[in-house]
Length: 209
Image 1 (spheres, one colour):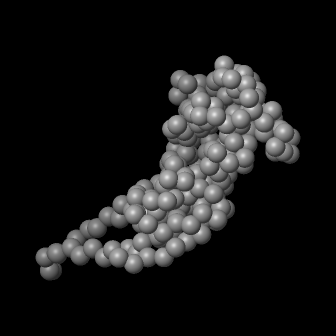
Image 2 (cartoon, rainbow, N blue to C red):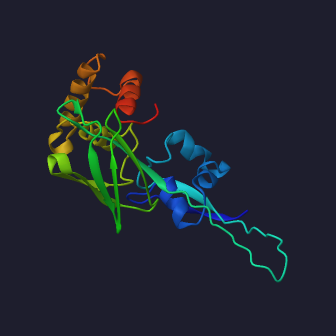
């Protein structure tokens, strides 16, 4: 089976790469030639620009059909899933109406009892916006731009998404934000991303540790 190597660009994830090549994400992520990538990046949705990923060729599928009849084939579509918890000043916005706009699509809904919303979006979506009528608040969204948690940019992104102020994203600001997070989570306050802090940061950000 053939294929080619691709360099990960800005906003790329395995999901978006698979969508562009007409493949399912597991077909790429689980390919043996991507073993090293899986060991380096344990989350297929958080790759680093410049990573190398092998994209296998699509395999042709043949279906036998009776002649002189109409047959319907449905292409399986797997949209990406967007999840977000709405929280203002440590207050969860439960049962709160929202309007999500992605491209030409508008979706409305209500957060659950813990402030979470979940919506399908196109795997190749890059930007969107979320409007909360109760607060007259609009938030700009960037999809697929999450770097790995064990990189300075990945730590900064998650801390900022959780409400920590990191002026200029300097190393000193990131370390200060990490210390504040550790203190809030009753962890050892070191300013370093140790295993416990890493797991707590991923969990607080809604990711699997």
